[in-house]
Image (cartoon, rainbow, N blue to C red; front, side, top):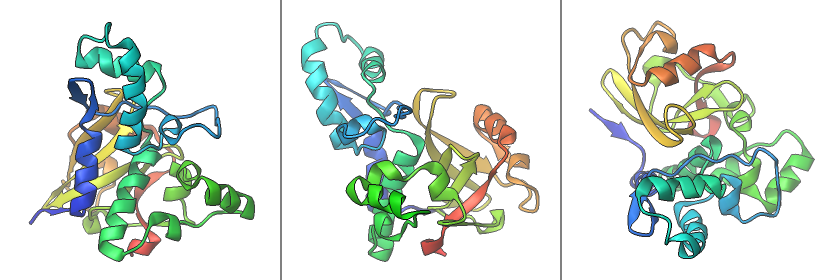
Length: 229
């Protein structure tokens, strides 16, 4: 029996996969604010919701629509303008919807921070102060066995990347993440559980690039938010 994320979380995922620019729609491109610039509109932080990202890109499109002739050029315009979503921004926003529906909680109410300085920054800009490492680290998550995987669990791939389990069905599960490979933006993959006693990299991954990067990661595995245990 297939088990999925909550209905509102699924709607949000669909919106991210159908960002609208002019007459086109496409999967949201990837963007991470690596320079740590602050006080920017949330859409430019790599943490925006679809409507926030669309509001910003629509302003740019109105000025440049004469040269935007396809979905590919519209997406490239977003990339050049630093508009998109990063891996933790995507996962946090989806988990926030999932927690609201299933637990009546916001993710910002349950995330723990390692210091009072971090908590203070998060008080003013909560979405820009939850990294992949904070979300999947021991402060906020615990390891789960492959045989117990369920929607809302996360695949930790090193300290700087996180993927979200979207659905689970019999001996396989699907995940979603924002990355630069094999495409620049949102993408999906699935893992066939060949033997639950073996590590995750020994299972059947549908996207070979994801498997290759996961194998190279030092700190990795399936984790679950403590609040979801």
